[in-house]
Image (cartoon, rainbow, N blue to C red):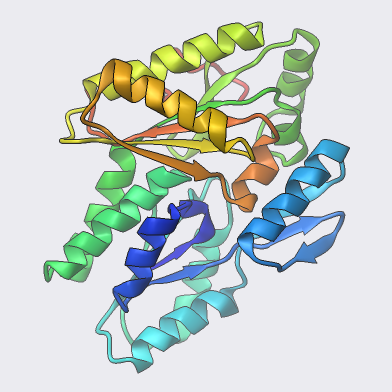
Length: 298
């Protein structure tokens, strides 16, 4: 099993996955002011937060095909029969394309999964695939487990502005400019792998209120047993945990709360102050999956 750092697994999950002996996570590059930052995740995130606060240019890149090829090759040489490679939405990154290039020289099957998602929604796909592999499932069933788990995860993102997403080319420039002028604090989601607008609150307090309500509705309607609720944040762990605890207490006391920093490759595009919630599904509520009144332009 191979994935990229956009999967955002919490530390405990990552330790378990790496302990399985059949897992590799390939890092995604972050460039600050045109300079590649290769320090460990914590130090790189610290550098990124400073750069975002100062308004310095931050860009990201797909992993080099050679990095993915090295991971695939290591499993081939270790005697594995196949690789399933689970990645960030192809609508947001070229990682899936890099994986397709990387597998060309590999002597065992490499099945690539475009989760059409990001963050722990992608991570839930990885977890499901690892579980299927551990039970002896074949390559297609393992890939299907990843796809279905990622599809069922509900995603809601609260950003302070669209400016950082505009600079990264993830939203329409005109939409971002109008949103900034009107002080809109949009709630976003992912639909068919793309960023969509769910609602457009016109104040930060209103955005926070609607974020809590929509995530709570998705959590309450989740049909998963002991569903995972992940609250992602950018350098704000205490507030993220407070949000998660309130949601679990109010809507699903049986849920598993995960508080996880957004990895640098995602933080670079959403900016400071962002909160994102991932609710494990399936769910009968489409609210947080970008299909209740998605609006054009994002």
